[in-house]
Structure formats: structure tokens, C-alpha cells
Amino acid sequence: MFADPAVAEVRLDAVRRNIEAIRRRTRPGTPICAAVKAEAYGHGFEQVLPALSDARVERLAVANLAEAIRLRTLGWSKPILSFGPELFFIGDGHRAERAREAVAAGVSCTICSIHEARELAAAAVKIARAAHVEIQIDTGMGRFGLLPEESEQLLAEVARCPHVVIDGVYTHFATADEPDFSFAREQLRRFSALVRRIEARGIPVRAFHAANSAAIFRLPESHLDQVRPGLAIYGYWGGPPDERPPDLYPSMRVVSRLAAVRRLPAGHPIGYGCTFTTSRESIIGTVPIGYADGYRRLFSNDAVMTIPRKSDPLPRPVPVVGRVSMDQINVDLTDAGDVRVGDEIVIIDDDPRAPNTVEGLARKMGTIPYEVTSLLGQRIHRKAVR
Image (tube, rainbow, N blue to C red; front, side):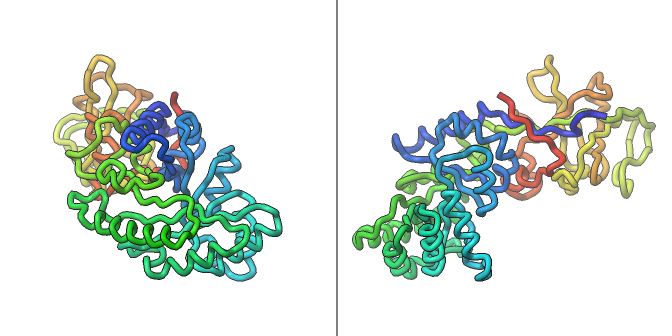
């Protein structure tokens, strides 16, 4: 029917402009460690990397070693931080091999024990390269990392490991995107107190960092030695809507084409379960995308797509009708004007005025923008647009 049922257009100029917006909020020379885990939050490694390189991003952060090694194969040569505990849960038989892979790839591994540091040090000796590590501090997230009082002794022991470099010590905010971020301030207070103690002991740490996307814009005192934006790189905002930075530009537009356009009589049911029935003679279109592609079933009878019109200043919304199925969705085109099979339809719009933006769909789902983009399936072709 079509070369690709749906295409996610990743706009590289938007990514670059979002990096510029982040740099405007930080001190000159503050490095950016860009979070690109989960295929760059669903946008695609291959599509996003050129924009990050053009914007001279200093560092990337990923979820695990596999993602880091993939970035190396795609040509990223600058530093990479892996958030995941690469060695802690690995069996003895595989730990040495995983340590060697991490050191060979030049990946900074998050560790939480001296045993991991020694394993990486041993690998460093074997291949004559330095091992790089970071330590995450749990100041209130309660998910991973060491409590502040547990970390000082480990840092002192790691600092004595030959061939091991402590690239960083970091924490992660739990509420930086909430309307009340007083708890984020408390987390920063706890982390700052630990930083002072580490520095007083003379433990060599290259960087202390804490600021995620929301904190970069809302909590400037958390910028420290580097910042770790994720969502903001892609132009989305997870904080209070009235605080959305005006210079963040959505970087993804998901488009498809109408696979069918049919005129149906009044009283005709649409989709599984007959949850929608036409109240008048209607023009119903079919879009070749569904919940297998990440377009959630809960959008059934409760979302819109948009039809682009050169003559209209605003995208024209058309409602999703009937249940979202695995591979297809129906939309009501009755009021959309002249439409034909093959016409473009926008599933996720990058126009902030449209109702079907990433943030708009997230609100409808009762979730966060991260989930909307990360759920997009692999059948949706990613395409970089300059």
C-alpha cells in the first residue's frame, strides 16, 4: 500500500535549538550529559546523534552497556555514562567479560560496591586502558544508589584502586517537575552536604551532577559541574504547563496516510465492540497504525488526529472513532473537507497549538510525555528531517 504505514519525522533543527535553550540556562562551559536511553526516548539513536554532535553535546547517558556499545558502533566517540548497575547482578562467570567490554568501550559504569571497582580495575590492567566509574547517591528517589552515609567510604576505597577514574558522583531528583519542588531542594541540600564532605577528604571526583530537564529550568542552583537533560532535548516539558519554556520545540511528528476513505450510512457501527455508531451519513477513514505501534487503546473514541491544510493556519482535527485495534484506527472525516485515499494524516503533531501533541496525548493518557514517545513501536519508521 505505502512504503511505510507510519513515519516518525525527527526534526534535527528542533533538537539543536533545544540544546541551545539548555545552554542559555547554564553557566558558560557547563557540559551537557544528554540522556538518550531507550533509543533516544523513542526518537531513534541514528536520527538524533547527528543533531547532538552538531550541537557539540559533551556526553551521553544510557540505561545499560548494550546501549552504550551501540552508540560506539554508530560513531559516538565522546564520553558515555551508563546508569545501569552493569556488574552488580551479573554472575561471576560473566562479570569479567562484561567489565572488559565496558572498559574497552570507554564507558563510565555506575557502581555500588568495591567489588565492581576491582573487577573493572582488573579489566583495565588486561587491556591497558583506564576504567571509568560513577556512583549514584540516593538522596530520596529510593530507586537505586547508595545512601549519602554509605558512599564516602566506598569512594575512598575506589579512589585507591589503580587504573580506576571516578568520573562523577550524581543524584536524581524525584520531584523536580512537580508544582511543589521543595523536596527537590531538600535532595539538593543532602547532596551538596555530601559533596562538601567528599571535597574535604580530597577524594578525586571529576564532576558532581544532579540537574535533569526540569531542574535545569526550575532549579538553577542544581546545575553544579554538568547537567543531564533528557526530555527537554526532544522539546517536551514534564513540569507545570504554565511554566513551559517558550524556546523548547517538539522534535517529533508522526504521520501516516489514509488507507481507506468510505461513506457509511447513519446507524453504522465502527470497530470492535461496536462502541461507536454513526449518527449521520459519515465519511470514515482508516489509518494503518494501532496499539501494536504504541498508539494506546485507551484513545478509542477519545482522541484526535490532524489533517494538514496549506490554506488553514491551524491543523484540522478529526476524531478517532471506534476502538483502536492492533494495526488500524478509524477517524471521522465528515467535517474535514475534501479527503482522499493517500492523503497525509498526522498522528502526533509537532505544532504546539494542535491537540495531538506529545504533551497533549500524555495528558489524555494521564501520564508523562516520556511514555508517549518511548512506546512508539519499531514498525514506525524513524526519519531524520533537516
